[in-house]
Structures are given as C-alpha cells and as structure tokens.
Length: 135
Image 1: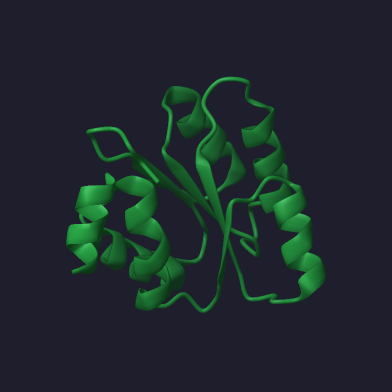
Image 2: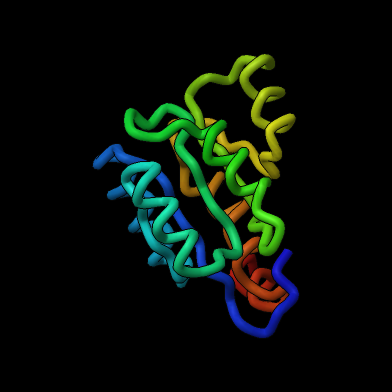
C-alpha cells in the first residue's frame, strides 16, 4: 500500500486496444495517474525516465514478454514498483511462474471493474484515500 502523501503513478503495459479502452476508463474513473506502454521498448523507455508506484503487465500481449519485464524490474537495484500481471491463463503453473519471477499481484482476464477496484486503489493512493474510494 502506498503510504506517501502523493498518489503513485501506474505504468500499464499492454498492446490490445480493447483492453486499453477499458483500463483507461477505469483508471480515469479511479483518479489514477498512469502511462501506457504498448511494447517492451516503450516500457523500458518510460521506466528509465521515471519511477512508477506500480506496473501492470499483460501476460499475453504480442509485443511484450511479461517474464522479461518482471526480471528487468526486479534487477533494478533502486526503485521497486508493485507489479500486477494480468492473463487469461489461470493455470497454476502460469501463476507460480509469475510469482517466482517477482509478481506481487495477479488479475485474471477478462478484466473487470471489481478486480481493478480491488487492487489499484491500495497501490496508488494513501490508505485514507483508498478507504474513501471503497466507501
């Protein structure tokens, strides 16, 4: 949970237009500050330019390897954002692979408003702000 006084910024790594329409809508409704990367190269450039409080990665994006991105995030010695992997593959083997790679949270696709509202506020806002959103 974010304990700083300012909300953290979220990086969304996804290349699916349909997913991004929904994610943009939900994050905007939650009042989140976010950037979107549609490829690994875009994600790397954004993460090199600034620190993110959380990173949400689509496991099955065509131009993104979620395990590679998790490895690069965890190899950084400085800032360690909270990581969320989204996937339509609910197999135990897939979930275990992501947690072993350093994933903090897992959200099953298709994404729902309920799932995003459960994980995003606690990562991006102070406990008081997250509580107010849930009320």
